[in-house]
Image (cartoon, rainbow, N blue to C red; front, side, top):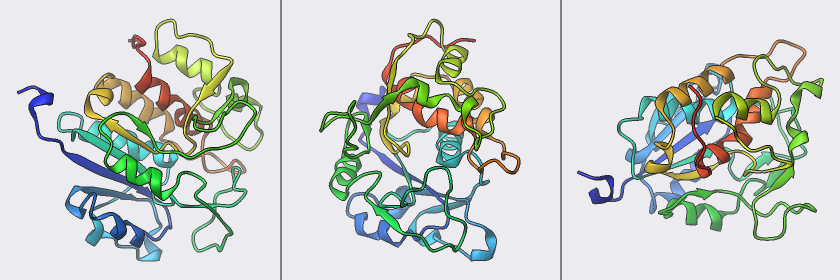
Length: 253
């Protein structure tokens, strides 16, 4: 049976760290707990349990939500839903002026409401039938209203960031060259901050399972102090996902 002959199915995949997920109940009219997978990287001492909201799995606190996206794809590669929606647990409540310093467990912080997306855009993603970055308008000189956030590619060179550790790849062109044959050199890159997406099965399957396994391997480490906990590779993959799903580039063996 062809994928196009299958009924439309959806899975919601949530990557969570120390954030209340009670808000997911508001969207059960779109997607039920039986179709929700929650990866929790919240420390055990917080006694977090959202098993009533979906399949609840512990995940190591490495690689940001990128690790959980890749983990889900690898573990479900041969059994993906028609559409998979990947989101962060703090989809509507990012720490204000976060930069690289993420809130510590239990730490109070001022919320930058709807930094990643709006409720309206999230509802559209939950019913999407095509590739949909879940984002909102981030005004910059390179980002006209109604378009996805864009920044100069050199901003993604983490070799020059003294707060971030890099072990494998620290530059966008470097990781692109490692995974694709003759990828174009870009002066600017486009991506939704936070890497929240609704992705069709066929789009995920454009890349081999081995491709995702290699990506997961390079984000699967905890940076050494005094570096921030998020690795340079995780920030790169946040930007890289958009291109592996939108462009017809040939994988490098």
